[in-house]
Length: 413
Ligand code: SF4
Image (cartoon, rainbow, N blue to C red):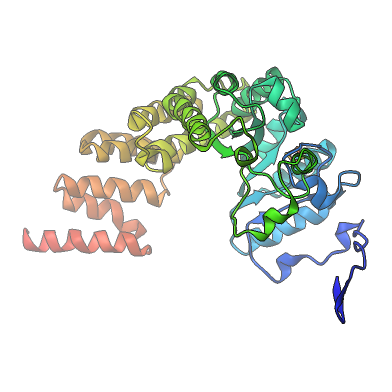
């Protein structure tokens, strides 16, 4: 649009670029972690801005070759983790398979997260994604209530979601759920249906959003048609437009309680969900399974879940996950995690024992050596600590501990 005197001229939408590969590779000029191989989604969810933003009839894609080149260039600049932000990454299965084959062949040692739909997954595709570096897939589950699903325009049966979540965890990736609460017709009963579904999905990550309405969505247009809202609302200073403000059957306190009930169900059961993971019986995935379990274990012992008061016994959960990881395959992070857990609980001797087991498999691991060196120092075995750390003195953090050892040895010859 442009201003012409006192009038505004609207020139209409610009034509879309059909061949996205014509675009220059931004990775040549910038460094970033967020990428998308496609633009648009054929879904028709009533709350989602994507259909209007991108148009639904014409989802456009980069080729796997173009997209791989982006990742390869960014990996060459030191990026080791990516957020692939396509609305539905696995919409075109063949394209994703081709990309995964290229990533596996290139062996870039990268990891990535993706977003998809539960009805666009299968075990073979999941195994390929895992081998290509995917470690988490987020799914828009939204609700467990069939009635509300229809109102949200996403009537996927719960059984399909449960299967996708099980298959994702089985392939060694975190299945993460997006839930929505405070939807049209939400009641304590429909929230209970969402909690029942959550208990079946057993997600290892979850985000719970209060339904807000975006202009241009079908939900907004329906609300406008029914006289619940007018476009004037956007002249107010508002950050967002929660659905409950337009719905005489809902109020803020009630909607907040819905969210609290969902979150409580998730956090109360998360340790159990983690311990319940059933991995695919596939030898080619064993090392990925160990990586997945140790990564998850670290989230409980030292990551986000370790400091979250809502989660009971994070260390016990981490311990079980590290043990399960090592039953799959030798894994540096699992040995390290076990050692760090022992240190956290002031048990240096078992820590040294488990770190030695790890070093038997991974003698060149600076992290295992550093952890063991610190344990030896805690036991006042400074000469052994110095001998253990010395081969890694090129690292600044190791040099710091070597200097401490030296001081002690000089003070107590
Ligand atoms: S919510 Fe997801 S599936 Fe539905 S239209 Fe939006 S992007 Fe597509």
